[in-house]
Length: 130
Ligand code: I3S
Image (cartoon, rainbow, N blue to C red; front, side):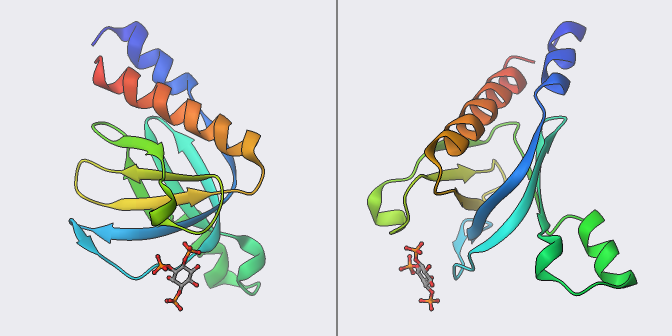
């Protein structure tokens, strides 16, 4: 892609608290484990970090906040509004990576989920055009 396009994807950045669970890995279903995560979009990659409030203070927990719990490359990924059968929660998005990992992300405030939806869609589009 052009340098301009690479530049644009770097401008698509966002961070905030969301609820998330992995639902499959390598195309294989895994048990849901909903947890609040500090979610960061940077350079076309979405990372989930443990909520600092959910872990006790100390040296090892500080490292836990820097090293992400999980990571989704948005190039080749898909995101859509989850259908009712995926979760009983409201405002749920379904994110599938090209490598076969699948996450649900959710937040009770609809506008917050809509903002994440938009920025992730824009990032995926930008990466696909490279
Ligand atoms: O899609 P599921 O399996 O009904 O998801 C629910 C379960 O994972 C449940 O945990 P256990 O059945 O492992 O105890 C969770 O507590 C629920 O939150 C899950 O459903 P929602 O509808 O909240 O995504």
